[in-house]
Length: 198
Image 1 (cartoon, rainbow, N blue to C red):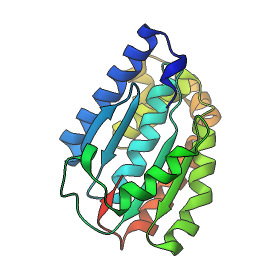
Image 2: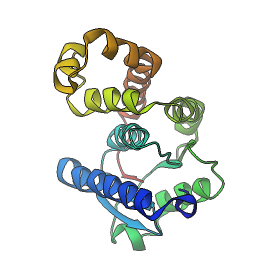
Image 3: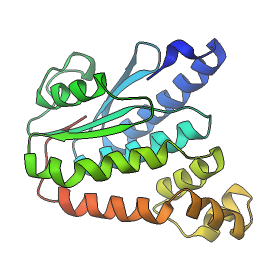
């Protein structure tokens, strides 16, 4: 990401938010993760779909503190046989190459399956662009929805102490329906895939 431009206080807030996300995914999805170089991080998942959900959540949670992540998502066959920081398998090579050239706040998807890469590549870039535009409140609404089993807007309103009208507005302006469709499409396309994801 872009930690060199951040104040020490802002960087600490970003690092804490990312560490919380890593810990949550380690607990929830048995993911492997670590942080490095300021605000850099890696997460590896056993199930590819979990990586996409996590990517949306990372962008939403960082939007809440007015920060953006450049995210490279990769899917490849194989298993994680070393700690994340020392792994050099195909998935890490794929994601690492993309990450080196990404502009701030953008997403890229790559895969050892070229057909899957074609089917998800452009949609993933567009979703990344949409999420890079989120306001803090839009990020909060979408992150809550994502982390509470895609709950109804009334539950979001009650939990975040917002009016249903404001939740609906933030959902709509944050492209919530498009995100929901995107994740449903990702789930369908990834059904036959298992293996290492970063």
